[in-house]
Length: 296
Image 1 (cartoon, helix red, strand yellow):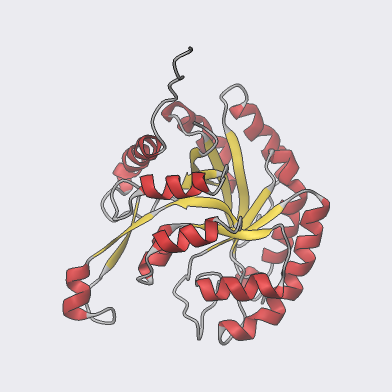
Image 2: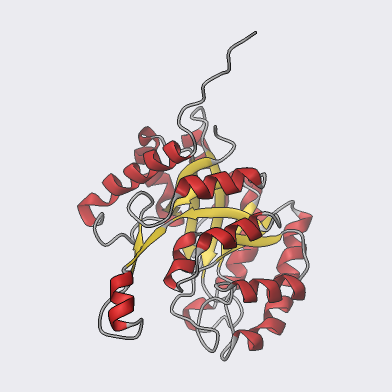
């Protein structure tokens, strides 16, 4: 059943302290994340500690990533591009072949970011290819639109088409989740069916959303009322049985890593209660425990 593992995200800087506490709950993979920079982290020492902790538990490190703006390198993003390079170089030490994050973006529309995107990630893709590493972009808009934003161009399927046309590298793909599409009122299921078949979905974040359609119909999406909330799987609107079925039909063998710390209900002291519920829910959507067929 673990050809699609169910795991969770952990902060890279505290991964070696957090992972031992999470292992007993039954997570099958961990994705390590850094915000804007890997900072002064000794990635190779961190990799050794983390791999020692998961040894003997049938747990994988599914990905390592840095989330910032590598295209401008402005302000607190000054080290983001170098962090991508360091993570690519260190991926093998963690036992993973996947590095992920935001694409970044230039001032102005998504169209105006494409040249710089192809320059930066063209070089990173070559560096990654030489090391057997793939690069995946999360589909979060970070408050951006087509016309402007500060973080990421990879939040819209039209942008994905442009990105892959501008940089047709086999080791460039998506870190997809339904939540970020639902926030834009995009139905994630037909989108997933299309993009899973392309082989461009390298990793899936386990994050869902709840859309208050009554609020949308009464107030629209620019009014005073919230109309959508990020949710832990099992509490949102998405049928994850459908998602996992579509992924399996497309031959996906990566992980679904829960992205917690967003749910408006299962938060604070209920955070891990919600995450473990999500873990067990996703395992059920995956089909439950493996049962061998009768021998004839």
